[in-house]
Every structure is written in structure tokens, then in C-alpha cells.
Amino acid sequence: MQPMNGTAATQPSHFVADPDGARYESDSRVNHKPEAAHTESAVRPARTGRIVVGVDGSEASLRALAKAASLADTLNTGLQVVTTWKFFTEYNDIGVTGWSPEEDATEILGDACRSQFGATLPEWVATSSAEGNPAQRLIDASEGAEMLVVGSRGHGGVVGLLLGSVSSACAEKAHCAVLVVH
Figure 1 (cartoon, rainbow, N blue to C red):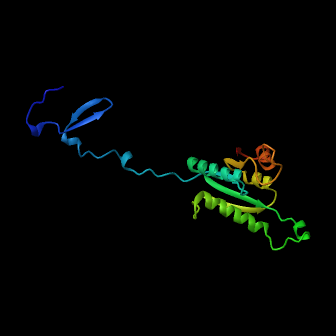
Figure 2 (cartoon, rainbow, N blue to C red; figure 1 turned 30 degrees about the vertical axis):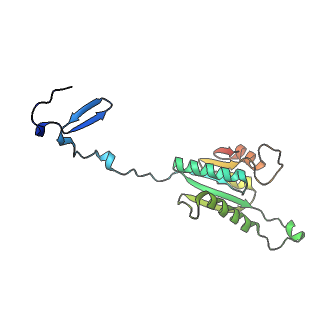
Figure 3 (cartoon, rainbow, N blue to C red; figure 1 turned 180 degrees about the horizontal axis):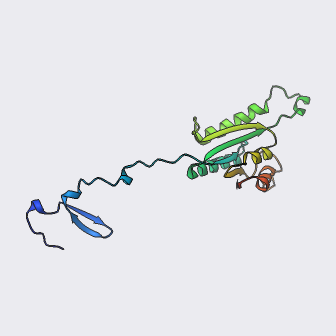
């Protein structure tokens, strides 16, 4: 330890412990302003790119939405949540009236987004509902996206299949990387 010479007024005033060892520093450094890099608040750059996720209300699609939202937030990209619907004219032949598959799809989309994000969607999340084949709509939406996220099994198909027909078609034909969530 260094000997302390002089009066109390000339002695270093504070003790600093750092990785290089402990030392005393003079008063002149006590009020030292931090470097500019430390005083600027960290501003997140604008989101670039887009992740697309398909939602049909199934548990697998809700897990896919959760994963896609997490990835979009981490990677600072936008998120496009897509659902599809089909109008089957055969339903009218068997007496189904007053039912709208478009309204059902919109309700499923809204419920899924509320369960993931709460009452208000973040500004980086967009939603869409379109009529058509789910696999083809998702493949179309994957154009220009960084990733397409789908659940392994939706509401349709044979329960024993390991991978649903929509997720299988998307994995084969999408225009970007595909993540299948189990």
C-alpha cells in the first residue's frame, strides 16, 4: 500500500475497485461526465423484414403464433398473422344458414391475437384474413418474408399424421425458411 503524504485536503477522496485492482482517485474525477456513448439512450432501429405466421385457432397454431411473435420481437422484424377461410356451397344444401366462414376466421384471428398480445396489437403486427386454400395463401404470403411459421397440426386432417397437410405443403413450397412448431 502506498504511504499517504500530505494533509486530508490533498489526499485522494474515494476508493475505486475495478478488474485491474483497487485504487484511490482524486476529487477531479468524481464529477467526471460519462462518455457520450453511455449517456445516449439506446434507440432500437426501425423494424425490417417480416415473419409470417398461420393461425387457425388450433393449439399448434397458437404455439406457432407465440413463437413467431417472440422471434419477430427478438429479430426486430414485423409480424404478419394470417388466417384463411373457405365458403362451401354444400353447407347451404344441408340447411346451414346464417353462418359465415369469413366472420368465423376473423373471430379466430382476433381471439388468437388478443390471447398473445392483449387488447391492443403492437404496431409491428399486421393481420389478414383471406378466402382460399390455407397452404397456398401462406405460401403466397411467404414471398419476401424472412420466415414462415406454422403449427404442425391444424384443425383438419387425420389425427394420426405427424405433420399436417398445410405445414407439409408450406415446408415444401414456401419462398423462405419455414419453422414448424409442435
